[in-house]
Image 1: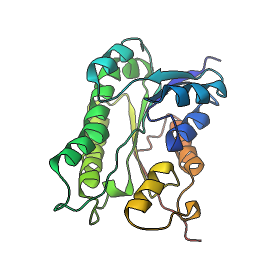
Image 2 (image 1 turned 135 degrees about the horizontal axis):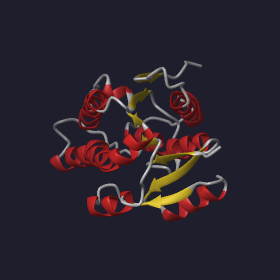
Image 3 (image 1 turned 90 degrees about the horizontal axis):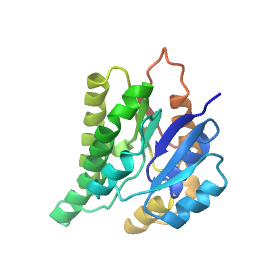
Image 4 (image 1 turned 45 degrees about the vertical axis):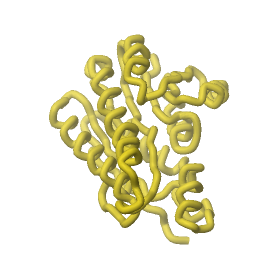
Length: 226
């Protein structure tokens, strides 16, 4: 049986690497990211996986990389940017970066790959956040980008009825990004306080493998208190 084809962005580590490992069981996985060394190392242990090194904010490079993809069964938008700060302390550059990485790059990559996704009647997975459902103080630029990402997913789902579109809203995940966020908050990082990347990756894999008579539109995950 021919394996399905998947592209995972932000695959060089953390949640993206975990999702790639889960999907590689029954997919050929393109490992998207900027760290070519990390992508190459990850691909060694995943049969059929291949690095797809591209900066998602370089739209010309993205267009060139997408031109080589003629069919795609699964597109997982996992790459993201998060930097905290109150409205008073956040400059416009941070807001622009949040929107560029968390929204505009997602929209453009999806647009370029729509022909390949349509051909496969594929599945688009948007790794969103609890911040895409509720905004908290200090999280304004990130939450705004994730609220917008949720709206994009809702619109895409109705515009492309042959595709499945799933928004995943996990709580905090034990990743290097989370460690940096906790440090910026002045806290002490303990990975046991957060969701495991493997747990979230399994939820993504379950959504992708849901039989085609169902459309998993939204998944919300929260850490269980210890």
